[in-house]
Length: 290
Ligand SMILES: [Zn+2]
Image 1 (cartoon, helix red, strand yellow):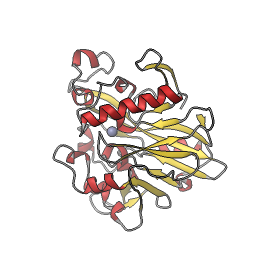
Image 2 (spheres, rainbow, N blue to C red):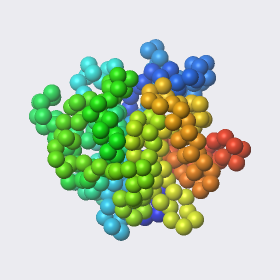
Image 3 (cartoon, protein in one colour):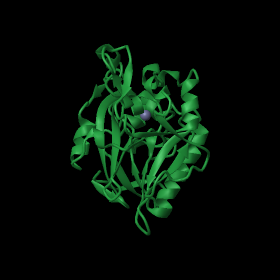
Image 4 (cartoon, rainbow, N blue to C red):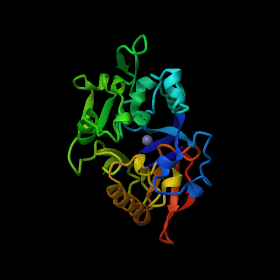
């Protein structure tokens, strides 16, 4: 657990899965990436799906950032990604604060790829029929550009959006859509960063450390694991690779200038890091106790 400004923050692994190692590292040769992420016989590397839980005890605000792939998967569908949801992980994380899923006030939905927010909903009854929200009392924050993109993705990324994940979200009043290029902070102690390189309107929460103290950025799929800190080590899934490159530079510049900490969505081992950028390239100074 780390304290960042008003918030106490933990990172919980809500499930594990595997994706093609080549797709995860784009133009980087396997001879290089395989040294740090060992592929299985299908060339897939192990990944986690992480939820940040951030609690501000002074205002009773309980924030989740991303909810993973969820558990609407049949065994057969899940096998393709070696998907192993941990149904209780978020509840267990909340119990460290003496809280339950019913206490969640806000969910930050970075983007709607199935591995980030399939966990927002679950089947009401039998699989394949209706879904319901898993955190119905919480405000769900999503950028309008991502919401609009999810309705009409490109051929390149349409497999990342599952209709069953969007069903319940389409109901009136469920989403709080964040607007524009420079959205105002949703509440005290956190503000938004936007990233469009991976997918349009990816919403990244920056927890504000306060005067002189480091802040914490949930890097989303801009920097999915500690293996993606080097600028060129970017995912082939990125819709706009050149944009992503510039955005990643900006994020690392933020870390260099302000000592901002990073939290990852997919690192199988590390929730987050403090970087040393004094040599001009990102070196992990130490891992965060997230
Ligand atoms: Zn992802």
